[in-house]
Each structure stands twice: as structure tokens, then as C-alpha cells.
Image (cartoon, rainbow, N blue to C red; front, side, top):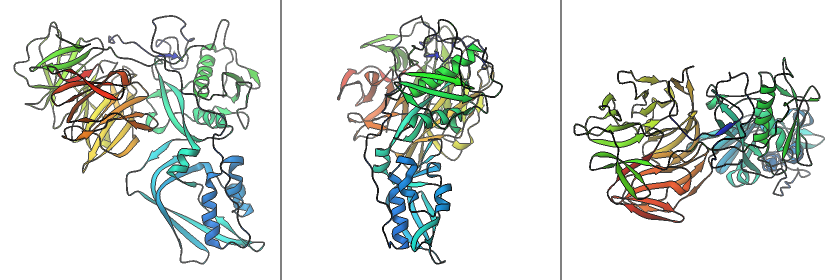
Length: 565
């Protein structure tokens, strides 16, 4: 199986070569082509806010105690010591506030239950962060109830039963929590994959990062990514101290082989990439069994992360034919046969610009075509999404019934593969894009005019054949969007299409944070290359490019463009 040329990531920062089995990996490469570097975002290791919630007041009534306890959830310092003051000594010793963080909308409702001194709180939930930092965003109308029991201790009311959770407003959550990127690799060890986790901005957040990293990838990435840490690896101490810029990580590793330099380097690299997002961390010392881990002679920890990028040339349509567009110039595609028997729409191409695909708007079929070869109608479906090429040579699309299929375009008689995605069965997919590293699908679904944006891990067979899209992670809930496009492996852009009014596309990172881009009237198509400097849109029949805070007209002859991928 040949793989299309592509400027690749130095996730190779975690591995020398994809030819090494998952159990081992060589050193970080120190030479090769120059790429656009994308260093991990640096965040503070020290808290940047001052929250000092009030403790329980003398003689407070039961309802006041419950409300005060919930308000004290903003005091994350000293392991929520103020919130524990509202609890009985027994519950204070066993309560786990980090198990769940519930972010709510509106005003919670607290009412007595049937039994005396029992209370129930009803919340409209916006999102929930679990104990590993994985966030689950909820659609509008999602609710949850929390029950509390209170008793008297030395004449003062205290909570004797409460859920293992804290409750925050969105404002408090955004003030207290920060997203941090954990780093894994794809299963063939060629690209790094970021896994965003949300932790309270407190000391030591380094401990939260390492514990989550050792726990493995988020559920939606399981089976789609690889980790260097053997199953059962744990943190040997209670914390990951950071002193003079060095984070010291001592692990307990089952059946540890100190002579396995390749695995040692991969473990160190995974820790280093994940921890160096903290401003206080410049280096990582890895210990196993109290002894420094051997990393081999000549090894240095200097390689940055690099994004997988796509060529700057786009594929588009001009008078019903596929054409290239780049730098204001439109050119035909050499070697392509005429498409007189088709009505192409939503064109796509691979990174080598050798294989192309489009949706025939007349028949509803996915059609692939290669240089010096006739078009092949692969399969039909209602509302097929724009085709998406992955780096393994497969072209993907989904239909409005939730069926996801992929096919190898260079194999003329190859049967399409039905990719398992049962979570899509009750949803209408309007956009599906495979990430540039090939590990994640970015999917937009729509129901009653309301869209959700999802990330799902791509699980493949040993030969790279797509098998399954995992149960997804909702990265954006209840938004206006018809399409979502990767700008890097950590950023994407979304927009609604087809309306005459002005719309503002949104720029997201994979943690779910976003900002709005300039508005454009009558947006009908969107394409994205490498970052915000290569975002294009079709509006009013003309192709526009995003230039800072405005959209600049580029061409009125080429339509419906798309970058490779």
C-alpha cells in the first residue's frame, strides 16, 4: 500500500520510525525538512486568581449550609479545605470533589425532600468534567439532581451525605479551570495526537496531568492512539514536584526493563510534551524505582511538536470541471478525463493531487477519478457529505442516514468499507472530515436546525482499513454550523452555509474554546488549509480569503474549493 506524500508531524517527537512496533520507538529525529512549528501552549503552573470562599457561619440553617457548601466549590486550594468544613468529619475524610465538576446554566433550585433534613438541588447542566479532566458538553435542556443530607454536629448543622462533585457557574469554571493537552501517538507511531483535559488552575497541576496521562487516552480516542506507558503504570509518589524548572516524575512500571531505551525515550517524550505546556516546566526527570531512567548516549530533549500540514493548492470547480486554485491562479488538472456525464459538486483530493473525488449532484453518488483514468461511481446516498481523504489513502463520506463509508480510489473495483458508527444512526451528518494525522473524525450533525460538533477516534485494522468511529466527544453543543474543517490537528473552523444573512465562522481548538471570525454575507462554501491565514469562503458567487479582520475577494470563476484531505 503506497502512502501519499505529506509534510508530516514530528510526532516523530515520540518516535523515530513507523516501522518500529508499538512496543518500542526510536529517538526523536534531529534532521529533515523544515516544518511549521507548533509548540505546546504554555500555561501558568501557579494560580492566576484569588478565590477565598466563606466557611460555615455559627448557627446557620440547613439550607444555608447546603448553599454555602456549593458556593465553596470555587475554593480549590488545599484540596477544597473550606468546602470540607461544611461536612461531617466522616464525610470530609471521604468526599472526592474532583470526581465530577458540574457546570450549570441559570439558577439552581434547592428544595426540601420528603424526609426531614434532606434536600434536593435541580440544575440545568452545561457541561461535566470527570475525574480525569475529560469534559462532556451537554445540549440545552440537560438537567441533573443532587441530593444532600444534613445532621447536627456539636450543635451545628453539617452535611452527612453529598455527591462526589463540585458545582460551578460557567464564569467560575472559566476562571478556575484551564485546558491542558496530553500527548499520545497514532497507532503506527508517526504522529502525535493531543487529548485536551480540564484541570483546576492550582498547584500542583503537574500531578493532575501525569495521573491523567498514565490513565490513558480519553474514551473517544481509545483504540485510535497509542501510549508508551505499560498497563498498570502508576505514579510512585503522591505528587509531581516542580523545582527550578524541572518536573520530577517517579513511576512504578510493571516488568520494567531499564535496558529498553526506545520505550524509555517514548515515555519521557510523552511526559515532556504534556508537562512543558506549564510555564514553570522546562525539563522532565523520569525515575523508575527511585533511579533515573536510561535514555541513551547522545539523546537530547529538544524537538518541538510540528503540525501535519497540507499543500497550499486547492481543488475547485470551474464550469463543471475540476481545476486547481493557488495564489489567484486557476489551472486545469492534467490527465483528468472530461466529466461530461457527471454534475460534480463538493470536490476533494489527496495530498499528492493524484486522486480526486466529488459528489455527483445529479445521481447523489460518490465518484472518484484519478489522473489518466476514467471516473468511477462508488456508491450512492442521500445528502452525502463532502469527501475527505485520509493519509492512509482512503476517501470517506457519510450520508444523512448516518451511514459512513470509505473506499480506496486507486482500486477501481474495490468495494467500499462500511465504517461502524452506531452513534450517528439517529443523527443527520452534514460534515465529516478526517484529521490530518488520520486518528480523528470531525463531524457536524444537525437535528431540528440545531447543530452539534463532535470528535471521534478512528479505529483501524492492522493494514489501515477503517473499522469504527468511537463514541464521540461533543466539542461544541447547540451551535449554528453545517460544516467543520481542520486547520491543524488542534484547530478547526465551523460555519453555517446557505443563508443570505451575514454569518461569522468560528475558530475552535479541540478543547472547545472558540472565537468568532469576521462576518460574510451569503456564505455557501468554506475551505481551510494551514491555520487562519488559509481560510477561504464562497459568498455571493465569488471566492474570498480571510485576511486579518476582513474577507478579500479572490476569484469569480472558481467555486467550491477544498484543500487536500
